[in-house]
Image: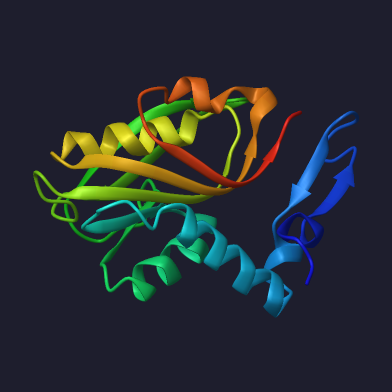
Length: 174
């Protein structure tokens, strides 16, 4: 059986020279790779007690929904600004090359609910930190973050220090 890392294709010099892009689509395109990714991420947090799974558009949806489904938990969407139809809360945050706004429905997380955040990747930690702040603004308690890949050289783990972070694969570089 292949290791999870073997399903991730490394693309050199994308999106710019010197960067090694870790392509999640190569995991998704392989039934065994996808199955292994979901099972590995789920196993990393099997000791956590949580009420709801939250994932950000769009790859957080891909990995978060099956984890929620397998554990009979609701799944909550965090989306880019302007994509949700009901009353929302939002947060602005800095990206590596600009700014972004994410939002979620105001009634999607209840005060005191324990929340598991799921995403494909943590790099600098900006998006993850924004998701945590958004969840906490509704009174939710983030009990853990689980990602498929961590780019440790970009220090996202440090940015969310104080929160549990589990990664199925950790790459030491950027």
